Each structure stands twice: as structure tokens, then as C-alpha cells.
Amino acid sequence: MGNINEIIELLRSKGLKVTPQRVAILQLLMNGGHFTMDQVLNELRKIEPNISISTVYNTLNTLVRLGILRSFEADGKTWYEMRKDPHINVICEDTGQIMDVDIDVSAIEREVSKLGIEIKDLNVIIRGNCRGTS
Image (tube, rainbow, N blue to C red; front, side):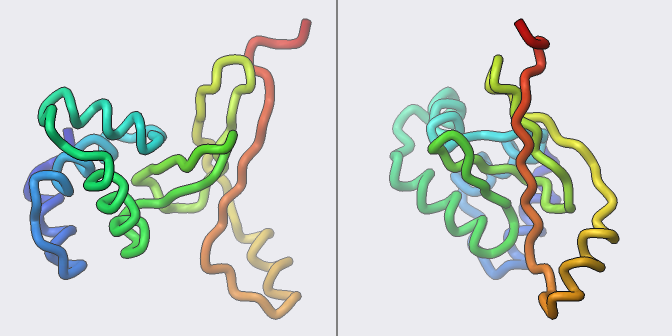
């Protein structure tokens, strides 16, 4: 689980109240990985059985809006992650596993800047088969 003091400081730095739901969500996501809203809800219900779907949904969206979490769409689902530095999300179509690959974005930034665009967010998803081909 993520360090509670880091979480409290992060929430306060964004002007948010420190609620048990926000702390629990950030503790889960600070460990790394990619989670759907349903996965976050199921994990939180292990420690707080009465937490509502709307509380988790609203909390995730607030944390994304404030730049604490990142979200991306894949396979008709919204995925949430704590990692915000530029990287590639690689999805194995055999297992559904999502893996991170670090990238150097300087070449991408150069090419995009030639178009007169400043990159605000870079989200790259690659799909493949991790069990090999048949």
C-alpha cells in the first residue's frame, strides 16, 4: 500500500479533503498497475463492504480531473493508473494483461511541435499477442 503521509500530502496539495475513500483508492493505485472502476470497487469492498459505486466513480473522476490519476480507454472500459509519465500501455490480447513500456518522447514531441501543437497528454496503446501466434 502507498505511504499514507504521501497520500495525505498529495490530496491536500490539490485542495481536496482527506477522505477514507480517496485514501483507499490512492493506496490501491500507488502500488502500480491498471484498474477498471469495477476492479477498484471490488478491492475497496474487501475493506469497506458498504462503499457505493457512485462514491468510487465520483472519486476516480475527481482524481483524474485534478491530475492525480490518469485514465485511458481500452476494450470498451476506462482504465485508471497512477503513473502519469510518458509510457506505452501494451495490451496482450491473449490474457488481457496491460504492461507498461518506458519511452523517450523527444522525437514525438519534435514532430508534433512542427505542427504547432504542444502535447498536453500522450497516451499510446499497443495491442499484441503475448503467447505467440498459433
